[in-house]
Image 1 (tube, rainbow, N blue to C red):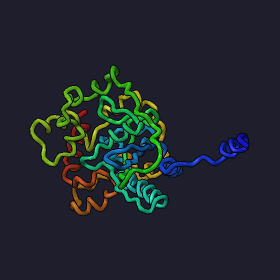
Image 2 (cartoon, helix red, strand yellow):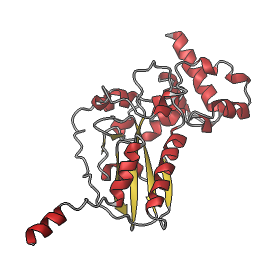
Image 3 (cartoon, rainbow, N blue to C red):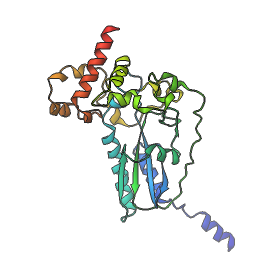
Image 4 (cartoon, rainbow, N blue to C red):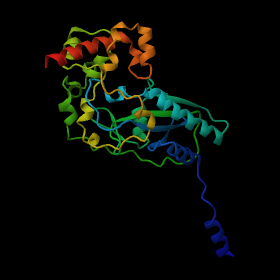
Length: 280
């Protein structure tokens, strides 16, 4: 009798918890790197959205800004996953978080075991490097199930390549006010900022610290098809930017993440970048 009972219990199908079901569903949507953590009495689902599409030509625009706006791509996937979670528990609600001010998304991802924070302050995943966007679902309560991923220990201590690659001393001084990416997005530039942009012209953003990182030497290509569409390969698209009104600029370039800043910033940076290139 005991043997039969043991055999019956052993052959019962394993109960899959809700977190595991959500992670399985996310992976079916090509969201390969994801996990959970708990904070303030609720579960947070965190996912990485890799965006490396292969080698690209340098045109003065950061890789991420040359692709379809990651806010809409990430939020679309998160909504799909959030709605699936609600089919498992009708009392559940959620909020989406993608680059939301005040939310420590990098640290959530780290705590969920999805990567470690590098000396360039980026989240680095061993498979996709730092070319990843981070998105989260903040659920209204704790979801049953285990958090299977442990935090990764950072091996980023003695390389220093990102520090050497930064031309403004941002990483060396831990002063992000002089980060080229930050400066390129400012509406008004101080004399010092203008001088830095003249010395290191950028149309939008900066990838110097990421491009030198060993973890970005050969990252896996993104499985997300949205990031292969509408890629900016050259600056010809901006040829008639001076003739556009700001509204027309917003309409023509709305698919890209730099549009929110408006035409004038892009036009100013573009003029600096092209003037510098002509003098080289």
